[in-house]
Image (cartoon, rainbow, N blue to C red; front, top):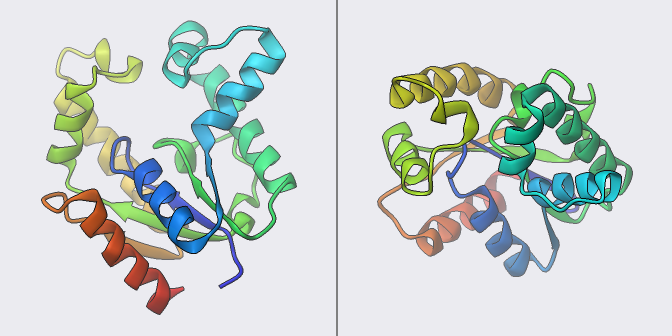
Length: 181
């Protein structure tokens, strides 16, 4: 298999964890899109902020444009041997380069929304939920909306078992990639 694998899915579904594990097993470089966003921001603004801080400080439109710039950077530097984890909102980003799917095989990591929300809540609500009077309801709305984008842009869909460990899920994901990609 000589294509980059792009992992998509909702926030905290395990894209980065699964991506790092896949990269190690497949002897590939791992790229977390969030890291690229933060690096581009730091280079342009001489300020080191997390994605959450960038979003909070500058708003969603600014963040989505920066995210699209990061994806273009990854496209320009793609060696077809990478594992890339996109942010949870990337596939629904209206500023994304039209041909972003040319990066490689897009695998949507589908997961149980309730478990995802519990993970998000446990780590602190992100800006797009923190100001909501009913954050769980808003999360479900966003999840339903993004689900359409995830399924429409995915070459393959892998259902994560949120009761299994990251290692067990990764073993199943490796089998899935070996047979499906």
